[in-house]
Structure formats: C-alpha cells, structure tokens
Image 1 (cartoon, rainbow, N blue to C red):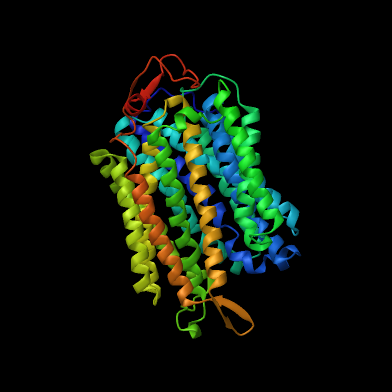
Image 2 (cartoon, rainbow, N blue to C red):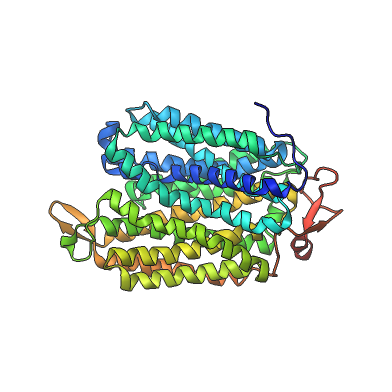
Length: 501
C-alpha cells in the first residue's frame, strides 16, 4: 500500500467526487463521536461505577478535546501537511475508541473520549484540503457538503447508538467506532492527496499551551457550572483564570513572529464578524439538539410529552440531519450567486423561523420532525457559508488554522447553549412521581431563546462586509505582518484580504 503522491493545486475532475466523498465520510464519522454515548447517559453511573456528576465527564471530555484540538491541529496542518494531520487525527480517534472499548470504569472512558474529541480537527482540515486541491468551480459545493457532515453525523449517531446500546453490550459502540475510524483512515491514506500549500515558520508551542489552558478554564465551568454551582468558588475561579490566561495569550500572540492564531488576520472585520456569528449559530443549532429529544421522550401523561422511547426519539430526529445534507447544494449555489454572506443571513433567519414554528408544533411527533427539519435547514445554509467566508478572507497558507478557529467558535456556542438551556429547564420544573421534569413553559422558553439568538446571529451577519466568494484568490506579493510566507508559486491571498487591509 503506497500513499497518494502530493497533489497539484487542482485535482483532476475525475477524482473530485472521490476526494469530497472520503472527506465528508470522515467528517460524519468524527461528528458521530459527539452523540455516541448520549443514549447511555441514564445508565453511565451504574456502568462505570460512579456518580451521575462524574459520569457526565464522558460527555465533557469529548467537548474539551475537540475545542482544544481544532485550532492546534489546524495550525500544525498548515505547517507540516494537512493530510498528515488528518491521518493523525483519525489515528487519535481510533486509539480513543480502543481505550474506551474494554473499559468498565470512569478514568479510561474519560481519557478515550477526550482522544475521540481530538478527531474533530478532521473537519477544518478537510475543508482546507478542499480549497487547495479542488478546482474552483467545485469548491463551494464541496465545502458545503463537508460542513453539513457535522450535523449529519450528530443526527444519525443518536439512533444508531441507541439501537446498538439497547440491542447489544454497550462496549460494541466503541469497537464499532474504532472500526469506522480505521476504514476512514485507510481511505484518506489511499485516496486523499496532500496539499502543496504550506506555511513557513515554527509551531508556536507557548501559544498552543496558553490557548489550551485558557479554553480549559473557560469551557470547564461552562460545562460543569450546573453541577458545581454557578456561584461556587471553583466556577468563578476558573472563569477568572480564563480571562487572565487568554489576555496574556493574546499579548504573546500579538508579538510572536509566527503565532498559533494570527490576531491581526483574525481581527479583520470579515473574519471577526463571521466568528462571532459562528458562536451564535452554534448556540442556536445545539439548543434544538438538546431540547427536542427531551420533549419526545417525556411521558404522554404530562400533557405535553410525546412518550417516545430513546431509540424512537433518535429516529424521529434523524431526518433533521439528512435535511442539512440535502440543502447544502442549494446553499452553495446561493453563495456562488449572491455571496456566502447572504447564505449565512438566510440560514440565521430560517433557524429563527424554525424555533417560531416549534411553539405551535411541539404537541406532536410529526410537528417536532417538521420544526427540527426547518432549524436544520437553516443550520445547513449557515454551516455551508461559514468556511466560504473564512477561506475568502485568509491566505491559503492559513486556511486550516483559520477554519480550526472558526470550528472552535462554534464549539463555544454549543457549550454555551448546553449551559443556558440546562439552567432554564432546571429552573422551570414540575414533579412527576419521584422525579422533577421540565415544564411545558420551560420548553417554550428554550424555543423562544433559540429564536432570539438566531435573530441576533442575523444582525451580526449584517456586519460582515462585502460579497466575498471563496475559491477566487488573487496573487499577493506582500503578506501582512505576522503571516508566514507560503510555498513559492502558491502565494495566493483572496481579494477580500486585500480589501480588508
């Protein structure tokens, strides 16, 4: 078995579909890891011989691993080869699955789940490879498909995991994820070419450690504040540490000649506003993923619960992920015709409409399917537009790092959604026998919050300047300060970068 040789700047048309298919499959596999253990949440304390609070680390660890990995792996890909880092990310996913597979205690599961989270770098790396090796006319639709893989994997992972968990031993989930990761790794090795676009310079180790520490201090209390108490010393102390560490990290990055994150580039209005929109869109997307399954599974005796089993609830939610994939070609066409800013704006407004529909449709399973599909359609438009906006505003040698940072922004949004929706539902409860459950008013409040956040996202999108289109770079002989030079012959800076200077 021999690896594919380095690619020319544009792969032949005959190979385009193969490259896109393999990279999208890789994106689906890594996103499945996000929902892999969700069906096990009620049983995790017993399975791992620990408390419910400790068992939740099996979810939190993957979130933290993904948040840390995406910007770091993206920069490593720009420096040392995106396909190489793509393979390493896949190997980490496989290793993490193999660590979890035989485990019956908390510690190895948390370690393995964090390693699985490191695989989330696959999506920004895949988008960056597409920019480097695909012909421009195929780039928009390819990036849209790759971006939608995040939602497709999350939606399909829930019913598949529930079916496996109910029908077999729960360890099969991890043996299966290891096998999927191995298959994807082989396909990448055999069929995906290496990009010839690289950056110069050394890897910013101090910047990577600082960003990782700052993110840990930020996301830990966001994820665990409900368990620890939002006013506890641990929660407030970690938030304070995050502020201090990230400020110091920003000072370091602004002075470093080859930073992990080029803050000069990231502070340009097109990138800054796109990243801010990504946080809000991530919040709006994850709110539906959290709330709708709970509504489906509550007993019908409540008067508003829909009485579905865990497996049935997962199956009812699966069409939403397929809708996200189905709308991605239309999002790409809209971006090509009117610019990705318009696609992102349409996505935010469609999400808001979906949450508005939820207020009237939450009383039936088909109603939940309908409003979840509308929200997912909006997310599909938004997720297709984000990488196009980012790639149109950064040099080719920074593509993976910039997409990694954008993925991080979405992760911050989803983490915030988990915290906020958890607080809302926890404070608007009623008793059903020995347990407390969210009230109908609590569910309505979460849907109104989702709609409001989506409207905020639309307002942020209006602040994105221009009508930039990805895949149409022009030569630039003068990289901005702090931006590593590209490989000779590949120095391409999009028009949007020149406009923003």
